[in-house]
Structures are given as structure tokens and as C-alpha cells.
Length: 257
Image (cartoon, rainbow, N blue to C red; front, side, top):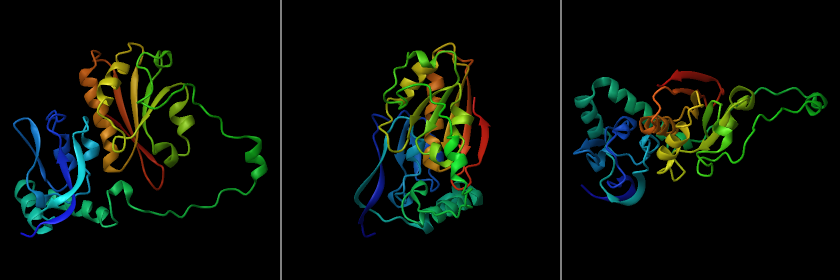
């Protein structure tokens, strides 16, 4: 097989904890846990779009550009049919449709036709929307785990894109709550699990609400929260997931733990 220079997944075994989340995040079945570490099963099973990256809680997965075997869709489908059946093949085909626009599904260019809002600007100017943010900083990288604004409030762990997709973020999610903001794909997220576990250890936080986008890479935020709960000495804390649709901004709720 002729090798080409292309994007392909690479795994830092020192960071990999063997959790296996990446194996379910990869629609092509290219990853497998071997001796407690994620391994690339075959180069030609990896399409290089990195859907698995958002599922990794430790930052062990990266996309690099190097010489490798080209992605073989036919061989990948045969592998999936053997290991996961027709459902696995259908999942891969859906992922490939998303990838056909170029880049990961969360980077695919889309345009929406919105209905025009009211032209009565005087009314909206007279009553601007009220910000419900009651703390600073908000970036997970920057907050101190023992900051006083975490006490006696539910904690919102929000993806950086969610506030722009849902028009009522402030009234629906921020009012009366503390918040941290993070991106599981673009941030250096290696310290996030431990830091979030430290925040969640505060005994007066009754619940954690994950607010994230529907794209696969954003699912890493829920993975980070789930892993943090395992490290947290508290076992009574509730974790909920609110998934925001890209186009409609509609939200569906899931109780994780």
C-alpha cells in the first residue's frame, strides 16, 4: 500500500489512563484498549477527523500530520460489520456524511435561515436583557477550586460555544448558579478532571449541570465531569447533562449520575 502524508490520530501513552471512552467516540472502530492503553488498531481504519478527541478526559489523543496508510473505507466497513454489526456500519456512514464537509463534525460549515426578529428596536433598547453572571473568572483554567462563589450553589460546566447557540443561557442556566467554561477539544484539558473534582468536593454544591453542544467533540465535557466525580470524595453529588442543538438551540436533558 502506498503511504501518503495526511492527518491521523496519535496517542500519548503516558497520559492515557485506559478509560476506553475514545473507543466509543471513534465511529470507525480504529481504537482499542490493549494492556490498559488505547492503541490505533490499523492506520487505514482512522479517517483523521478526530471525533475521538473530545471523548478523552486526559488529553492523550492528538491529530498529527504524517506519512501513513490512507483511510480505507471499504476495509473499515468490513471490520465494523464483523465487530459491531450493521448498526456500527450505519453509525460510521452517518459520521462520514458529517465529515464530507471537511474537518470534524463540529467544524463543518453551516448556515441557518432565521426568521426576522421584531423591528421595534425602541422596546428592546428600553429593556436590555439582564446578565445573570455573578462571578469572575469563569474559565476553568483560571478559577480557584475553593473560590467562595462555588459555595451553596449548583455548578454549571458550560462549553464555550453553548452561550451563542442558546438565546436564554443567562436566565435558564446562570441565574443563581456558579459557572465554569471550557472546551474539551481546543483547551489544554489535561488538568481539568482533577481541578473539577476539587471544585465538586465542596459539600454545599448540590448538583453539577453540563451544558454542551450536540457535536461529538463536545461530549468530552461530560466525560471530564464523569471522571471528576470518580475522583471526588463526595458520592451524593448529582450530574445532569443539557445538550444544545446547533441550529434550533433546543435543549434535551439527560441525568448522567
